[in-house]
Image (tube, rainbow, N blue to C red; front, side, top):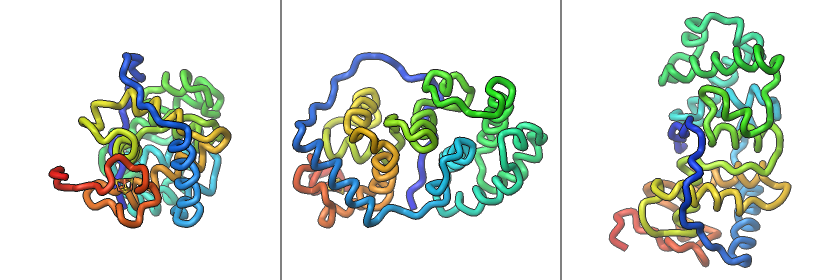
Length: 240
Ligand code: SF4
């Protein structure tokens, strides 16, 4: 399964960027087909069975740079050892790093521990849902804030990780370097969310990027977006 690269942990830049124009009919078709695909093919993942912000946060931090199938057992072990922000905040950071092993990228357990300490110290053990407050935490960037708001608090907040960048760029842009267009892709990610369905829509985008519109060999022939995708048929050699 595809891994997610570490999200930008800095605050969003508010610089101007060309917006991506999507006509209403294409937008509607994308939303409907994505949600339908997700109902039929979405992955059954343990962090989709909870709305506990702490559990969501742990899963999101673990999924940065690590494949889903490696995260699942560690996620369960970690939560059994540290069931709450308070438990994690009270633990010595060295122990937290040992529990984290062998996931790697050891800055992540340190950050998670720091977020737990701040949550307990500043917010009485309850992670806030406000975007600005979330972004004020060291270790919570725009992606993670969006994921927490969307997956824990069921807000229609946008997300933009590697999978989502790839899908949106291929379907709606198909020109230039995708990662250089993050500002407009953030705006597009937000504009596409069907009202009140941010949770499913964002989960669907991540699954779709991991399972259909994959980095190297996307399944274009079977893809429900192929009738309007600007990259169809995608040529992984870049010669198309
Ligand atoms: S048609 Fe191909 S490139 Fe376009 S969204 Fe589907 S899988 Fe991705």
